Image 1 (cartoon, rainbow, N blue to C red):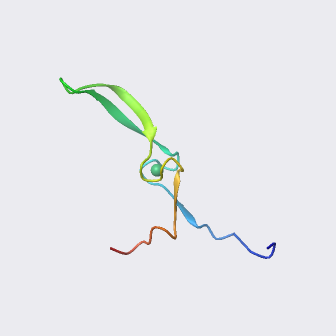
Image 2 (cartoon, rainbow, N blue to C red):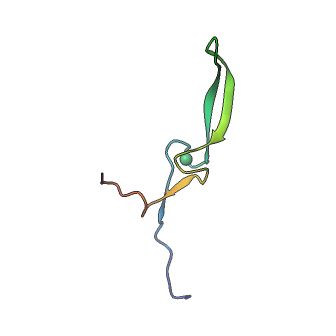
Length: 62
Ligand SMILES: [Zn+2]
């Protein structure tokens, strides 16, 4: 198993969170729609990992 090379990256950095795994979204108050600040939440694109598997997301498809 030591002969296997893993130099080729199998993951690509997530764009929405820029590889941080977290995205900041504005927090709005429901009634007045006022932006009261920003909340940092888990990136739903990469599920907080910061990178997405390249094999799981082909550049062309659908
Ligand atoms: Zn992400």
